Amino acid sequence: MGEALAEPVVPVRRGWMAWLFAANLGLWLAIYAPIQVLLPQQAELLDKANKELVFGIVTGVGALVSLLVVPLIGFLSDRTTSRFGRRHPWTLAGAAVGAAGLAVLANAPSVFVMTVGWCLVQAGIGGMLAALTSAVPDRVPVVQRAQVGGLIGISQMLGTVLGAVVVTLLVSGLTAGYLACAAIVVVGALFFVWRTPDTQLIAKPVKPTFWISPREHPDFAWAWLGHLMINLGNAFGTLYLLFFLGDVVHHPSPEDGLLVLMALYGVALAAGAVLFGARSDRSGRRKPYVYLAAVVMAVAALLLVVWPTWPSALIAAPLLGVGFGTYWAVAIALLTQVLPAASDRAKDLGVLNVANALPQVIAPLLTAVILAGLGGYRGLFAMSALATALAAVLMSRVRSVV
Image (cartoon, rainbow, N blue to C red; front, top):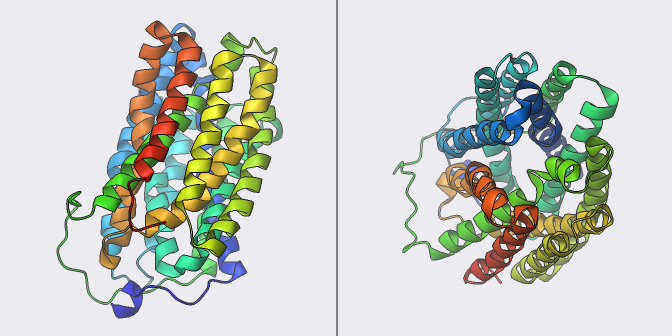
């Protein structure tokens, strides 16, 4: 058990980083291609008059499933004593369940079946995420974590952009789009498991519990809250972007417009993640980069408040990208540095990942209220800026990380 729980000190090699990157790329593509393109199209196909409501219900219920599954799978993987390792069995199982859910979506004849399919996707991909995220504190020394976090952020961006490319340009139709996503996520998981080692746990840790006391671990609590708010701000700014382009900007082809914005977003995200992740590792400082990221993301959202047009969106997209890329690189390092115990890394990261999933549950509900009575899309982007700024305030309360 000692080797599995020891703090890593040997730097990981580029090959290991590359396979982790590939697995995360498949994971994020399988999430964001449906969220950005396929699910909105399917919601409109099944119930055009209530497309926003359908999309909100499906994504909200699915995110609730992810919210429950991620810490559970993390908890189980922390205590897995398989000869194949602690994390790899859950990576493969998660990819398989996620692919099955995408196959269900490919032929969903109703909103109910669509919801079931997306719940399977969120359960499977959530389990895969729990296993892959825990690889960072398991394998990566602290001095490398922002660099690796930057690569994970880039994989999330590329998953978003390439997902849009795959389901709009390379394949046509909902069925082909969903099945392509299923194949990609499985291939990424298989190669990561095949090409990287996974430490075997000999004896299960003691004190199995999901509760992490904010009183005993205040830095973990403040980091969780800050992570929640920045993801809520990002959800407000991105979940309904396709509808924003069609209903407010009146873009002649919202899907093509979304692809352009995601490309700009992606290039800027990669630049922010690589540049500021490396600088953070060299300096050993995390919070100044979190503050910078929050300010840039808030400015991007405010730009759409005062000027909700296509030219404004072309400016806001790369601003949001460089901000989120910077944040994601540094956040991985910061969050893994406030974990309470080595024996519960995956479970505790699963609790942190609740802050990723919870905004997908509450954002659709809050968005419906905001769009109906609090200023429409201007109000929505204003709330995005507010949530992002609040994240910086909350992160400032973390004391053990500079």
